Length: 100
Image (tube, rainbow, N blue to C red):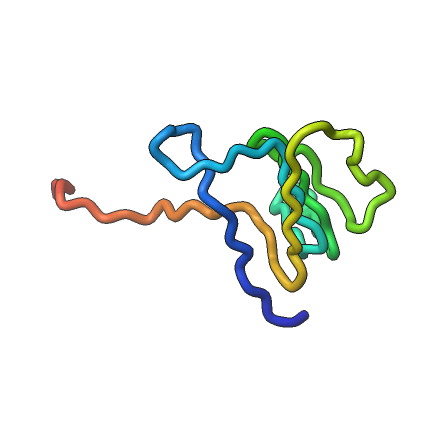
């Protein structure tokens, strides 16, 4: 395996104060996808389809289903040489209010 760079996409939020793109569907194609699910699913190359800010499907790329039956705005991102995986949460913190 080679080195991977991070695929950066715009910040999405339900808050009106954050930058938000008005789009219906995003497709990230030809990416290495690590799902971190119970089966440790790994797709290379893979495709992620996001509809209305929710992951709709993850599968191998190229696929037989092209998704052309979808009506709405579609943005396609090329994920070549990129690794796509869930965001990790850092639960490490310090507090000055700890009592001994």
